[in-house]
Every structure is written in C-alpha cells, then in structure tokens.
Length: 296
Ligand code: NAP
Image (tube, rainbow, N blue to C red; front, side, top):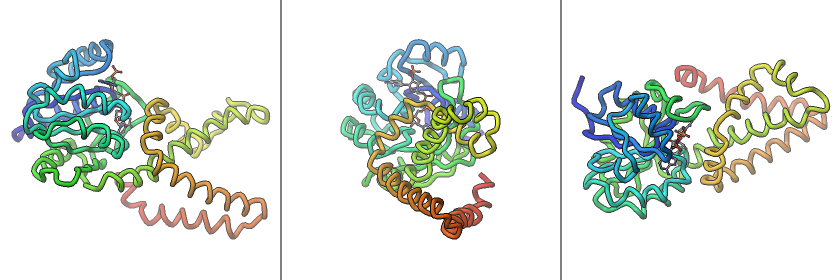
C-alpha cells in the first residue's frame, strides 16, 4: 500500500456519507488515522461501536484538533454554525472540505468563519442512497461516481490537487467547476427529480377514491417503483437541499411546469405528434448517453 495522502482525517458528522468516507479511507489507506464527531451522543456511541474510526471526539472542535484534512459531512443548513465552532481549532495548512449537495449556500455560510491559514475546498460526492446514519455507509459508495470540487477563486492549486487525490483514492472520478454551475447542474440532475418523485409518490395518497393505496404499490411497474425509492430519501435533508438551492431549483421547476403544460395541452387535444416529439427527444437523449450511464 502506498503512503497515506493525509495524516489525520477529521470527519464532522458520520451519517451515510461520513461513515462511507471513513470506511473507504480506511480500506484504501488514504489516511493514517481518522477521528470523528457527531451531534448526538447516540451517534457517537454507535460510531465507536462500529469501529470504523480510530477515535470519537466529544465535540466538533476537539475532532479537528491537529487534523490535516477536515471533511464536514452534515446537513447543509448546519454548515455555518459548525464552521464557526471548528474554526478556532483548525490546524495551519489543513484542507477543509464538505460534502454538501448544494455549494452556494455552504460556501456562503462556511467561508466567512474559516481562518486564512487553512485551504477551503468545497466538494460534493455525487453518490448516495435513500438511507441515513452511520450504519448505512459502505466503503464502495464512491467507486466510479463523480466527486465535484468547487474551490473558490485563488485557492492553492496544491490543496485542490491533494483533495482530488484523496477522492480518486476512494474510487471517485473528480471534476472541478464553479459553485454557481454546480448548483444548476445538480438542480437539473438531482434536486428536480427528487421533487418530482416526492410529488408523484405523494399522489398515491390522493388516488384513494379510485384505487387503493395498496393497489398502487402492488401493481407499480418500474416507473413508480423507482420513484418510491427516491421518495424514501430523508425528508429533512431534502427540505434543506431544496431551500439551499432554491434559486436554481425554482428556475428548473419553472421550465418543467412549462413542459408539463405543453404535454397537457397536447394530451387534451389528442395531439399524438406533439406527445411523440417530446418522448422521442427524451428517448434520443437517453440513447446518446446510454453507454456512459450503463457503465456507471
Ligand atoms: P445523515 O446520514 O443524516 O448524517 C448526518 C450526520 O450529520 C449525522 O452523523 C449527524 O449526527 C451529523 N450532524 C448533524 N448536525 C450536526 C452538527 N451540528 N454537528 C455535528 N454533527 C452533526 O446524512 P448524509 O446522507 O450523510 O448527508 C450528509 C451531507 O451529505 C448532506 O449535506 C448532504 O447534502 C450530503 N450528501 C448526501 C447524499 C445522500 O444521498 N444522502 C449524497 C451526497 C451528498 P447525529 O446523528 O448525531 O444527528
């Protein structure tokens, strides 16, 4: 095994993502030691019991003491207060990162608290499941998935490369983009699909008069079933993500509603050509990208 990329990794938050990073960092030898903290005593105790880190700290500030890599793995709405909490204990030269699904709000909330002697490199591993908590993580989560880095202008390129090397070691492909671009890309590829899944599955409640909810579940073919998996995602986390990315998401939602309105008009008018044109464009889009999507 090659030399570790970092001496001491501090994970602030050890849910699905934090515990997957712990497991993957250990499995790959990416770091020499791992210390973690979590908000509740119950989670800290569970992480110690699972034995996936070397040390569990009693506070977020204590966790980052002496760490040369700090990754904040908590809900995006918590990032500001937690940055303020850890800032006085961050070691000079440390790389400080996060995993938040939205980057604009995280950078806005964290950056003002961080001292100039650390390198802030925000990140988003585009990988996950609908499960939460330290038991839900697994070492292979990031293999062949993207991790997007959004370093603010002027960030030391060496620090960005060190973090990129860490994510590559965990199996991820790394891409760098601006914060604003990240938030638009993710609004389209992840946040809007979650909103749609929540509404489509929520409709199962409303159809009760015509068909029973159990019939909806029993006879659900691939489409509805896939929506139910996405709609099982943590509602609190997705509330936070939607609010944190509200501008980009509202823009995409506006476009989506316009397209739905076109479909409704076509449907009511019995305009098969218009319906088929929309379906054909989408099918062609999928076909064009199928080899890459199927490989992931
Ligand atoms: P999770 O499983 O619910 O875990 C959240 C963790 O954060 C828990 O350990 C929680 O501790 C801890 N936490 C919350 N507030 C804290 C605080 N103030 N101080 C210290 N720890 C705190 O969530 P997750 O799915 O890992 O998501 C974490 C982040 O990853 C989010 O920002 C999300 O946007 C991002 N992300 C998620 C996915 C996904 O699919 N889930 C994918 C990519 C990125 P307690 O258990 O003690 O409350």
